[in-house]
Length: 373
Image (cartoon, rainbow, N blue to C red; front, side, top):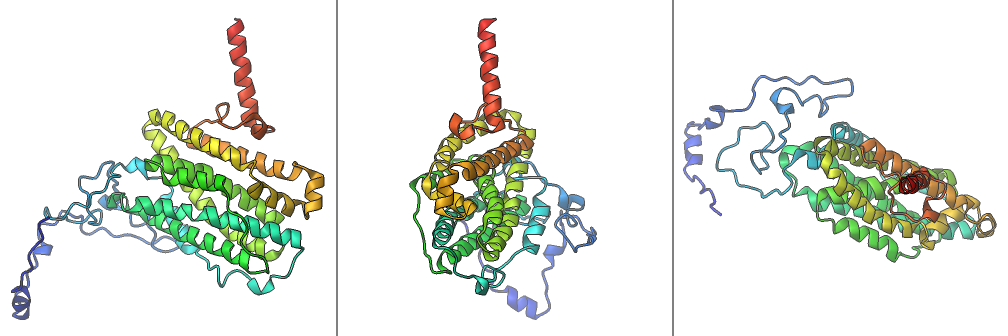
């Protein structure tokens, strides 16, 4: 690597009033553009004006020079490997960033920890186990973006900025659920090999496409469904607030993932086969989560109100969450332009009661009729 030598005489020349001012001449940047603040302030969308709002599909350089600036030829190459805009972009990423920075909250100050009271031992055990699982899974949604951020071309800076907010969001989620497990006389519960296998699948993804599909669309989508249910089955107002605040963050991440996939497929529909293959593998592991006691039983006990009530109700409470989670996942895929109905890699017993099971049944009936004709 060739390093630019320091001009040791420059300071002396400046002291004599001999300014260089070369940075004023020959600029290729657009001058005279004025960004107008909107009602909420000066947003990323507001400054995407003139040529500064032009996003290159394939940037000509791999530098950290700000998009739209005048870049000298001797600026070093940063070696970015993600240089295709559609690989990381979504049409809502600027708005999601603005929302993220305006809705940051503190797991220390914004949760009414002093109001947490002793609860039934069954419920405390269930809440601590659920908090253990959630503190286990949430950090992967920090680790995955962090793994890819330094590989993404700086011309896509708004997407990188949003992913930075996701890293902070998920660190806070890990923090708040760890605090809940330790705040009320309980403690950490049991980790799960099945959960860890799914997290490893995300981190081992060979492309951003694969990891984003597994994490944003599938993994975080299921967690978002769990947060929604958690707000309803929370044993006290403290947990209710935790789930509500985490839910608003998670909704942003899922929205980004859904609209990113939509953007990706609109520009290259042939990639649908790849995304189907990614989700095939992810669903095979997710099916095990629906039969993992460390995941299923805490939510069932919290919904029923006790271990005895959960045993009496059987799978009724967990079935509601299972069906809702799968339906919301299918809706996200459909919104992104990827129809998973009829081809999900989940056993029939897991799909029971969902439109995915109906579509699979219809597809099977169609095949049978085709064979008879």
